[in-house]
Image 1 (spheres, rainbow, N blue to C red):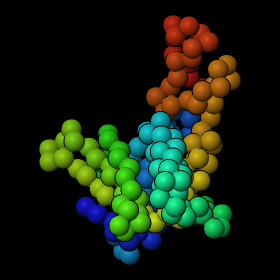
Image 2: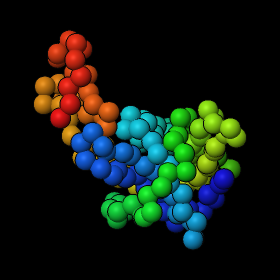
Image 3: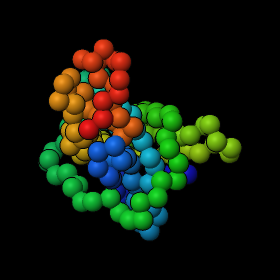
Length: 166
């Protein structure tokens, strides 16, 4: 499935504490897709999108900086039903079209699920800003400062001998 001109591409989370789950949501017209993702994947996707855009700007003299700082802060749309859980993520730059391609896939199921989203540099920067906010709002361990995953947290300050859940 491909979203060539998405109206909205956002990250969000639902649930509290150990039940917190992270999602990517894409809307193009009346078509809505939601993909489950881990907190770590969301962090890396945000960082990698920024790095790709910075590198393109540096090497190709393409302006990928965002002119305004408007960020979509609206909630995820309901129903919040994930089509699949993204096990692999890929980010690429199309120099001809001047767009970023984000590919999310779950190759472990039959048939393999895959979803491509084509983003303008502006939309990719806005996604990164919102994704950072979503991740930052995840509770952190009071002992080590690492963010607590939905399934709990093995705190290195406790030498990893027991799972620390809050």
